[in-house]
Amino acid sequence: MKKIIIATKNKGKAKDFEALFGPLGYDVLTLHDVADDMDVEETGTTFEENALIKATALSERLQTMVIADDSGLEIDALDGRPGIYSARYAGEAKSDEANIDKVLEELVNVEELNRTARFVCAIAIASPNLESVTVRGTCEGIIAKERKGTNGFGYDPIFYVPSENKMMAELSAEEKGAISHRGNAIKKLSEHIAKLF
Ligand SMILES: O=c1[nH]c(=O)c2ncn([C@@H]3O[C@H](COP(=O)(O)OP(=O)(O)OP(=O)(O)O)[C@@H](O)[C@H]3O)c2[nH]1
Ligand SMILES: [Mg+2]
Image 1 (cartoon, rainbow, N blue to C red):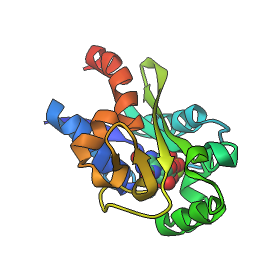
Image 2 (image 1 turned 180 degrees about the vertical axis):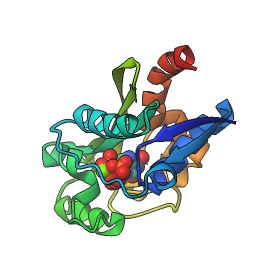
Image 3 (image 1 turned 120 degrees about the vertical axis):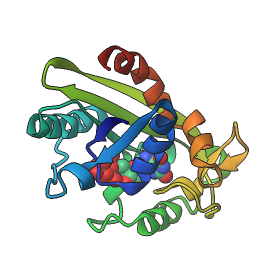
């Protein structure tokens, strides 16, 4: 089976990638499989910079082609926060539950009309022999007042997707991939990947 390496330790992201790449005949490997000891610091100021930092670090170490994803949630009423700090919004423990609690608390007095938000996903592809590429996918939604659904990860239980009339966490991995920021970024990357394999 063809292999694709994603420089991530986030198991939720890995599942999303498996749903996107599995049907194309790829086996998805993550940092847990290829470099469990590696912990790359996200020192960039944009999603794209952080995705490139992660992809380049692992590509240089393994001397092979690597993909990385840096993503997050931009809430308009919070001036774009948590943004690139989405994973650690409620602290270094990186707790999805605590992150959701913090967002709901900050939006407690914000009415539905003003709860607009979007998921952003930058994907970088780095390879020893080729110039790096980054692409960005987004997905528009509304932050709900309470959790619903058990699929996905992160903020999915409070992210309402108007086009589906469902929370992101109510969608299957395949349904999420068809409309998500990650799926949209992958679509943009697919042309490059077709050329590389
Ligand atoms: O509900 C969600 N559905 C998604 O589809 C999604 N994509 C991203 N996010 C949030 O943004 C952080 C990424 O931060 P991030 O790119 O630094 O990743 P991470 O630190 O979790 O793992 P790694 O890939 O860096 O190893 C994640 O932890 C989540 O909080 C999402 N939340
Ligand atoms: Mg991270």
